[in-house]
Length: 354
Ligand SMILES: Cc1cc2nc3c(=O)[nH]c(=O)nc-3n(C[C@H](O)[C@H](O)[C@H](O)COP(=O)(O)OP(=O)(O)OC[C@H]3O[C@@H](n4cnc5c(N)ncnc54)[C@H](O)[C@@H]3O)c2cc1C
Image (cartoon, rainbow, N blue to C red; front, top):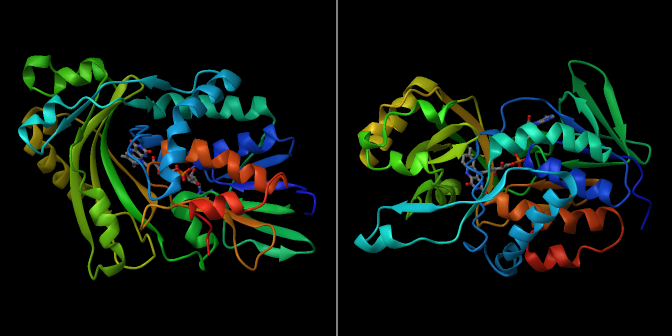
């Protein structure tokens, strides 16, 4: 296998950052290019449902996720990992009694820590938007950047979430994108007293509240057959630094193009109506409303591996349960890129992009 050479990762969210750390740990020189735009990771609940599974052998691998996060923290310092209570609503009467083990990586803590952690690990950080698909040049790839300039690398990993399709239009169709919206409250302590509603008590105890039956997976599964856009609300919330994320509304459009952001005012009204169905006190909380594009793959298996017919071009995207999948898959992909393993482990998980 040829030497890995100069490596560039496009995308500085959860996927690109953890992959960059895994690559430098293997002794490789890594540049991480990020547009610095709103990303899914920064508004994520960060729930690590390692027991919730994924199709096939990937489900078993996900049980390693808690140990992976602890290992990352042992190496790089606090990243926001914590065991936390989970309360479920909806379903049969006994749902409220279910208390599955749960953990969260607080996305506000993670996002605050990543620039320092990446720099300390030796990852070169480059701010810029990659304007289109990487262009082949002698033995490598050239990236056109905004606001200007080019960047060359021997190998490029696309870890740009919903931005991946613009960089690789021929990605398998199973990778799509939705828009997800939340109320992003900056200060939990400013919430009304717990008596204001039955669920807010859980917020003050830093618990995550989620539906017993998520509607989002069914919406994602229906995506290939959609003829018009559809949206759903999965009412719930999660601690977010000193604040609280209340969500979430998901909107999926027909086709593979994420398109322009949906009208925020209309999305906020729909989200508040959905929250009111759980607890009117939640629907009355101030906000602001924020929304981001989120990549997903129909079928639940992400895209991890080399892009066919493009030597030195890789993809790492489309996760379902990213906070459990990314920490276990990043080391596997890093081993392949570093030449320490072949693609058989990734093939066995069904995640190769072909
Ligand atoms: C409200 C909400 C709740 C969620 N809850 C959970 C949860 O509880 N558990 C869980 O596991 N997952 C959850 N998710 C999903 C999870 O957060 C995402 O799947 C994950 O964060 C995606 O990470 P990523 O790095 O692939 O993409 P992103 O975080 O979107 O990062 C992509 C990065 O690429 C950059 N980029 C894009 N295009 C370009 C370009 N052309 N040039 C340069 N840079 C570019 C962007 O600026 C961005 O920084 C949730 C998501 C949302 C929105």
